[in-house]
Image 1 (spheres, rainbow, N blue to C red):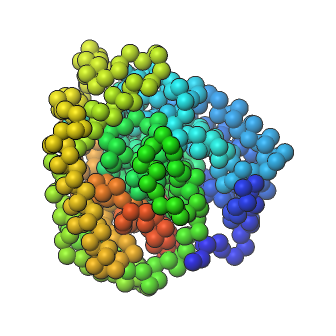
Image 2: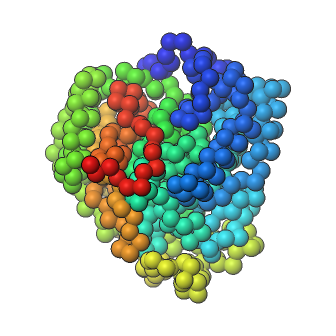
Image 3: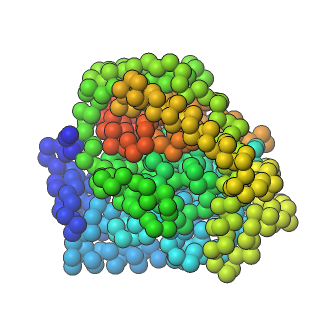
Length: 526
């Protein structure tokens, strides 16, 4: 397959022996890709320190002031020192690889053993300084990335209330959609999605249990990859449910997301899910960036996820026409995934696993944290109701606390049912029967208005079958409705990231639907 390297590109060698491409001319950092940033630092007079200054200025001007999109919850006080050390290392030894000196934001539920906190947006963890790096943070540091700061999120990754407002946390406040400031950024990786879209960092890391990478990516006009469960270690990440939780890259291009995926993907003895990975997984996912990758591919259309919006359907039909024009065989599928069939049992599994997994996580936090159980958190929220629960409650916390151990028959039955329906009788069945390279569906509708009174009110979209199955899901920008981004989902079976990257990259290259936000007060309804 092609590499996607265009004529006239500059090839950058790395100490690890890899090759990266970037346009030869100097590029302004706004909308710059990772290879372009590397070329700017290698050939264009930029340094990692200068990039950190650039992004910090934008965070101050756009995130903290101006439109005040409120996507960054904390700045790393050591970012400039880290960048300076990496600049010196580049001068003396050369770059470690494609992320050397690149400023990155990570979600505030991912442990970093530095002077930043890891709080999941909750005041209960306001003094939680991680004892050691999460595996994700460790991989990024080893790759030479600069951890610029933490991104805001829906508190507790949107698993506290049945009437929550995405993008709100007690510690960070409400994150706003940069395309229309009165619109919701979706959650729970709200800050990660908004910051990438608004060019407050090069790329970001989010986490997903069901929709929390792909929904904010779609709503904010960027690319998100929710990988196969176990491709990226979950060690050191505040959990919801171990049968579905994963971290993943959020970027402005499929190429940048593919770079990040290769760096984050690795086996970890502290996460047994990474121990069942196939031995021959790729180390570098950029090899699948083929602009002709749709030609001859068989793409299955999950029509059962259409129909919630006529305007979104028009965007999807235009996307399917582009795929056909690029040489794809587009196959309309009968209903096989059936939306709604997982709702009750998925929540049942999450409630059981949340209680067990969160208790295990809290047992390992530093000595400055007093809450050690879910019951402690419930009590903390009640004592601090005005700050923690001004808009919505903690119904899910209370329901989870009432659950028994993971040996319970109700839990085991629900988990087995969900995985059977989503895997063998769902995605796997469709891929096999129709000989598909990938399946597609609308990721979601245009962003809803942020409503602190009633909570979220999403219209429809795709995430649950892939989330419940633990299968990969890539979303890329597909178009706009009233100036609001709409994403299209590419998904498939376990470890099918190479195929999904190939076809989603080809689609993105053919359509070029990514457009930077303009920070309008409201959607363009005229």
